[in-house]
Length: 493
Image 1 (cartoon, helix red, strand yellow):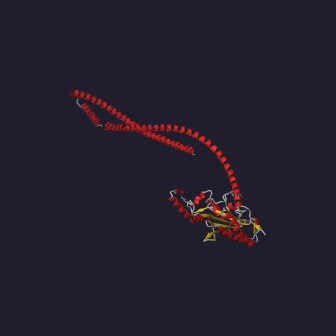
Image 2: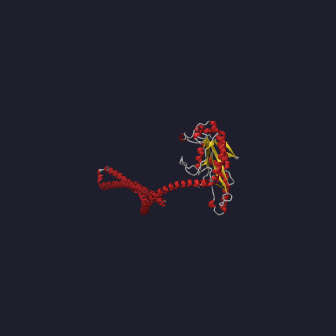
Image 3: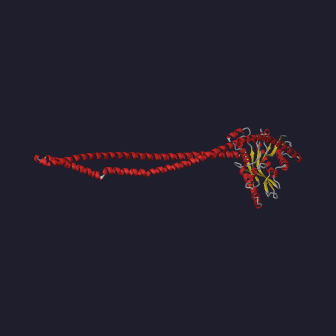
């Protein structure tokens, strides 16, 4: 008669010997990883790595189950373990949490209130938010040559074992609430993964929490030894013997086996001691590494203190420079104000000069007395010329009498010509003066234009220099403040 192995064990908070990973469900991310594996949702790259273990061509034979109305029912599609576990926490623990929070509020300790129980359990490194178990009969050598019909028969027996397991893990003050189970037929051996939440009912608890997650209340030496490896194992062996003619291999002393309490305790203590010694070795190595890091950090801290002292001196120098820059800024503002006042002072004299030049030019060109004088001279010269012409027409016997008059007339004519000559010189002088005034006016206008242009350039240069110095000082101050904050943070760290 073929002898096969029987396995109905749960994951524990230790490292798996093959994978080196933690096999417990300590947080929601661990539950998400379990959900991904149980649904066999893998990328093409992950599928290529798992070809030796999983035949994805047979994935359609896998089945998923949940508890509905107290019965194990099959579901189609994806098994969302994360969402189901959240619903179990809400449905099972929320009333107890509300009463506990109300008690904490009445006792004046609102800081002890529990906002989210699943988050609280996830944050506790000693608790698991859910527990995963595995049910399997036989190994690869037992199933490599079996027919499809026999594999389907063993699946029915595995489901029977699962139902008996759930029933056996329910007591007067504890219960294992099943979230979901996955039957895998696409691997080397048919097996079932089941995930649930261990619950302990403690109505008389001193802390006031009447219901809590507690793995040890559900999975202990009694339930594991007497029920899973006792009653359930015996029923499974009867079913396997009737269907296949097989029997189970002899039980060995182990974590999930049925043996005396003292033996179990001794074996458990030995295993715990070995685990703690391994952990202690790791902690010693970590402590030595931490001591080295500590020494290194102390050296870095000393260097930082030196740099901080140097930075303090540098900041003092920068403060002096900033104060000098502020004084320079005030001086530039004073000089700018003075220059603006000087430029404004030029405005009125320049306007007066322009006005004077305009009036002077008009006086030279349109002076009424000068115009009248020119007309009189021209008129008198014309009359004198006519008189000479008339004198030449006087008869000779009368010229002697008129000689005096003629001489006077000639004298008057000469005087007139001299006067005309002098008048023309005066006119030329006036014209020269007018030209000089116009040239002076043009040069003054050029000077005014140059003064205004220099005024504008000086204002622009001064503003640009003032603004440039201000922006440069602002950027420098920002850099100084940023460096100081960074050094302060490093020093505090």
